[in-house]
Length: 262
Image (cartoon, rainbow, N blue to C red):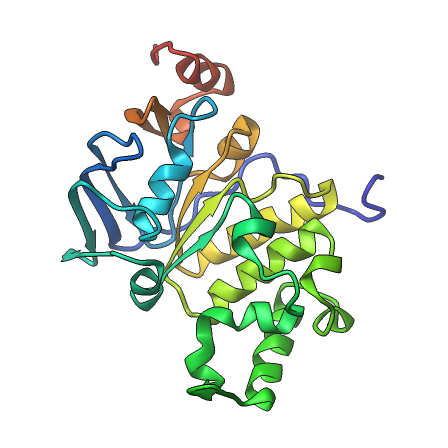
């Protein structure tokens, strides 16, 4: 009733077929307070990460993306060790990050929607400083249709778009870059209920197409709805990682607050 349309209100995302391992962390630590975290991510899988505010989820995603340094431990992509020392290196390897703060870190607000969509795929729309605006328009129109972004929004500055549409711009950017691993940091914070349901649908669709995703969220029902496995962080340490069907919301809440799985 709030959204003004019917919304598919499935509380639990159906499990999608999982492919091979695409990303693995082995005892990853950072100067920002991450301590020897190890887990893997498979194609088509959503690994949810949750914990109390400040538990380390954002720091972990930034480290994987090369925005913050890794002090020790290793990252593997398709079974091969990789060094990711910058976001540019992560993008080249097919990793994208939807940041927690979309306005300060995710978008260039004075650029229009189309320009924001193509920021991570500039090689596809030009050479050097010259932009092929026809190619840029083709990419923008394609992802506007796919993510249901109004065509009239493409020439609008990102600053004047709703929170939900801004999130779709960032997601479109990573789809346009052909990323295989998507890091999602509080992706539905500050967007309305209709946009949230649409975002859940997109995450489900992307997992079915084989994309691997790591989802950091303090919204426990969201973690329960979207994740295949759930990792609980506490003070930068991995407390436990469990398959979603084996844990209830009450048990997850207990673990986040310091309990153990019975």
